[in-house]
Amino acid sequence: MDVMVSLPMQAFIRDLRQGSRQSIRDCVQGLEDLGYWGVIVVDHILRSDTDVAEHHDEEHFNWRFPDPLSTLGYLAAITTTVRVGTRILVVPYRSPIATAHAVATVDSLSGGRVVLGVAPGYDASEFVKLGVPRTKRGRLTDEYLDVMRTLWAADGPVDFDGPTVSFQSAELQLGPVQRPGPPLWVGGNTQVALERAVRVGDGWTPSIFAYHWPSATDGVHLTRDQLPGMLEWAGQRRAEAGLAPLTCVPSSGVPLKFTDSPQHPGRADSDIQQFSAIGTVEEQLREFQLFHQAGCSKFVIRLLGADTDDFLAQAEVFAKQIMPFIEQG
Image 1 (cartoon, helix red, strand yellow):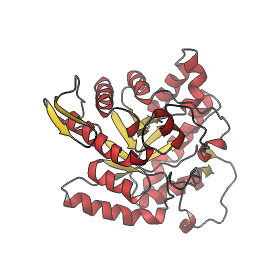
Image 2 (cartoon, one colour):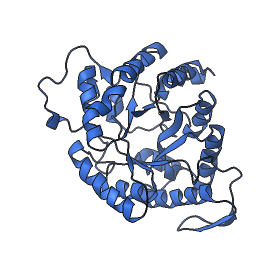
Image 3 (tube, one colour):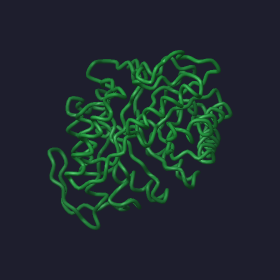
């Protein structure tokens, strides 16, 4: 079972400020040794006053994020087989041409191991400070992804004529190893996000947990019962377009917390509509098994430890006691 781990970069901030990379290196190489399929990093550029509920219950509250694309270059250099990626790169924040070049560079440096999770973003405060029109984020995302895909797939100079981006005879200095480009996992829980994934993505990566969105315009909740119908619809659209089936890669949300005693006594399978991210190994295994049955073939999880040893101890529990048994449920 392919599982990607969202790295707790906020836990590494003190090391990064001091110029130390040891904790990052030890965690990522440890994950690779444990057989994880990939590691991902999150994208925020500016500090925000937004109260993100998935964060504030966590023991180690120090939410700072280094630049994701720069970080991927380092992660690629210290690993050999694990995939490196983003979940989620906020597409409207950056020039699509510069982003295409940066991603292609990391894909080349890594030998073709980049997986790019993308989405329009949501943080209103960050959009304002960056001078990006939040009301146009969906349209900008669609256009920017088309720009990036056009440049990645090109074997020479190409033209592009869009609502906000136009160029003639453009060619990246360095193209990606993966052709026609690195896999795109489109984030978002809405039908619009799924439609975007169907059109341009290789995967769809919704967040399926009890996330308390800061406002009604930031996102919607999704349940396990909704997945089969949505994936069936997506499969039909992809088949009509002559495209491969869409990979469903949900995120289990907040960091997993393993407990010795049951946290959901008497819970029926029908009650498991979102990831709880807390419970015994058996309770959490059942959640992943049910989502696999619903059509999810890969997973993104988050782990958070007090230090490197604690982080890797939790990673080992998941790798040895959950990951091998997901498909058996």
